[in-house]
Image (cartoon, rainbow, N blue to C red; front, side, top):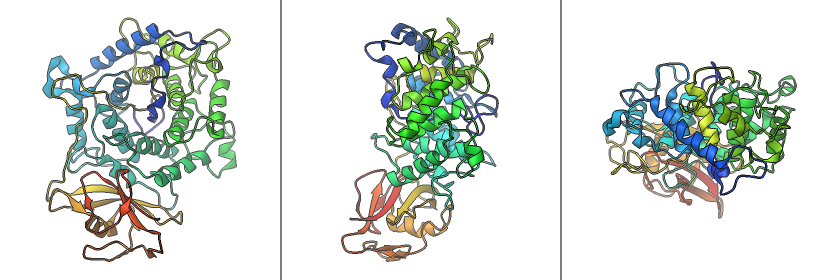
Length: 473
């Protein structure tokens, strides 16, 4: 899947996490209305994994040149319980999929001369599923900071040009879904909430979403929605903490229900196809909504999962895009498997079964003299949230909050930090951007979602930390 464009030949693949619903299809009993059995789902998973393994290059790579990249296989493999570190060409552990992918993304030339925000979102979602800490891919590669660099200061909550709304949906999916190695959310909730507000504002009158921005445009909001983007957007909201009972999620669910046809497919603008069904089912999975329940059973007794299983070649395991196709599609196979496996748009990496391979691959410290990026969020409590990527060149294996704040004067986007008191030394930070401590309301710092403590210039900061500064009690 490519995150540059919509799902077919020009699509922006969806990727969200919210895996709380990931076991929905694999519960001990099949829901009363379900027609795809546990045995069928298990077979679909195992044969689907076999097909995706066959897509691995001889060099161990899943990254392809241009178009829809096979690297989206990492999200489906993880959803189906297969660790990328154990996927090898010809059993050569030195070319395992995780190692090769990490090296590709850590390279200085990645992702090319004209990167877009969705390149980094795609990277975050897939490194996470592959068991690579996306903020610590290498000493010079922090994908989280790369994403935050595209924060739109004039339109808080959006990532990349707001007209390309998909970049904001996948930004929310990435930041809310790709957690730390300890399982905590690394981004502060106010940053997540800003994008939740932006996604809400783009919900069309029919309850769904489309790839382009609609907020504030009555004509755009009145247009028909897209199945794929509706699945991605509702998943992003649920990943961000919105409950399935929220009116926005209920409206999206009802939109999808209205598009269900007799075969269990959703009637998308491209007709019945695996990708659209996969995105919609992943959206339902992410929100804890049963895609095999009575609400999503057609008059002929078919569910969206039934349609996906029927699209899979047997015994090969690949999924076809259209029901009339005679060969499998790698892109459709990723979407189909991830959805059938019960996941949203990414998945927590399973522990590798390969001896000696840890669950996570990550760079643990700054390389002295090597430039590195950190994500920084500044919240003064007034709602004027600022976010940016700070580039600095540490002289040691750790740095300090003071050094981060000093480097933030040249952050991307600019204006994240305009002034700090004190500007030197190692004391407590008492003022940022002209907003000072006041009574019990003082500046505090949180690193990667840790408990907030008093902000001091000497506070240690590690490679990959998401630095969150907040004024509060």
